[in-house]
Length: 334
Image (cartoon, rainbow, N blue to C red; front, side, top):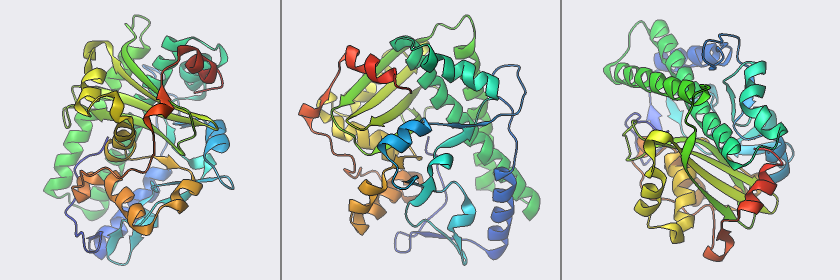
């Protein structure tokens, strides 16, 4: 879920910072990458393992070239150059690290996600697992950012007003996400009531998983998304909790309706999302200008970009909904 960032220069697409801030960011980055996180399952507290936002088997099968995909690096060290944050292009990421997050201990990772896949539960169980995964990765990313900013503050000895405001916002959002996860994992959970699925009769070359607020910047109402490609088919799953019935349809209407499915795909993956996993084959087909537009779109809070680049190409006749088709593909894993 994109958040507001720092000021920027469109001419350089780089954020100027001091050498002291760069050093503090490097130390904080190394600290967070080595940090152990606790399992998000209510009252667990065990050490979380690395989970994939998109199963590694699907990434290998549908996206990877030479065991790598393209994505924004989560390490600030790789983008810290000279006295600037260089926002550059997407990086090659090994499949083993693509979209990973420290969300659950081994036992609860299997309990939350593995059981749905192993038992081949029907649609509702699968949607619940995908919804939980999107909430979990969003919560984990916010926890990582909080740890990063707290460590950076410790190294610098101070925290500017913008960072302080962001820390307070993240703390509120983490609490909300943790409450949502607790409710959905409760044995008394009312489940997921609002969901829509778009199927595309080809591999779109991109995968994504996350959360966005709708209306924008209203964290009380959120939609979870899972974009899952297979070699000959792709799916976009939109899910919302029981207290947000109708929000998914409202979002689709806001985008112009189902006939604007290409716009919906690109809006969610690149403008509202921030951690797309892209096939190197698709990335290398883009012009340098289009690559730059893609990165600026993903980092839209920094660049103020609202124009959505048509990276994912989807024609109307390629889109449909077939419940039997959905169940058959989901049985391969989510």
